[in-house]
Image 1: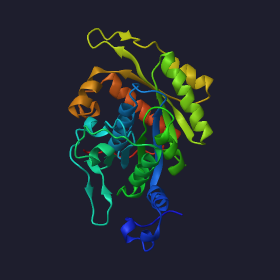
Image 2 (image 1 turned 180 degrees about the horizontal axis):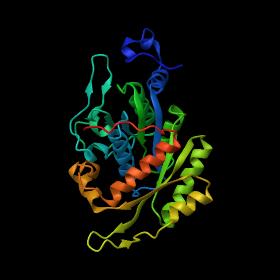
Image 3 (image 1 turned 45 degrees about the vertical axis):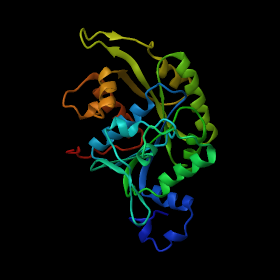
Image 4 (image 1 turned 90 degrees about the horizontal axis):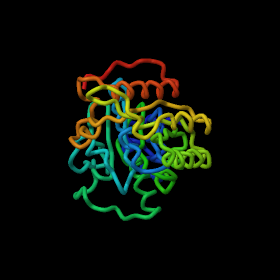
Length: 289
């Protein structure tokens, strides 16, 4: 059943619920849950999760972005967010509000020293991810985008168990060494009964900023070929763009810039493909943020 309470503090039975039940109540207020995964590091998974969440928010959807990469969190810095998250008197975690319809939570935003090393094993990881879901004030959302660390370890396994109706978006780059690990991620999802929305190929070549010629840095077509072989929907290609790196370092995503680019157009097309795959055919008004 869908929880009708806006806050667990106002729920008559809220104090008696377990963390798992509280997480279920919070998740019941969120229409779509997307977990962004990759088989290996270095494929730009966090960038894909960030730009997908931001593009959805700019289309007018209410979006939460949850960073469960506990050992290497990067989301807050990519959005230029600083400071520790607030805690309400009811012990709820208040997410950072990047814009009026984009909320962001990361373990980095709960540390006094953002350079601190997180040295945790499985049970602690499970507990903190459960807390992010149960104790955060997400409220009603259209989307919760979950940025998971690379591989098939504790964090994605915890997400698959706590968010059983989530759909996976798997990120790869075109070269075979990345695609080999992507096939493991696909088989992981099938093993734990996590629905796969599709596969997106990141860093699909570079359009030279001077001559505009396309340069296939890591070869091309590997993502499309793998999606066909593994019978997974292909969600599109995102080209490499140096401005994405610059924007991430400055905490200003390139989607915030007025100038369009091949990368920005590709992100919009990718986001539209995700929406179509979820049956979201209606168009919301764009955000003024």
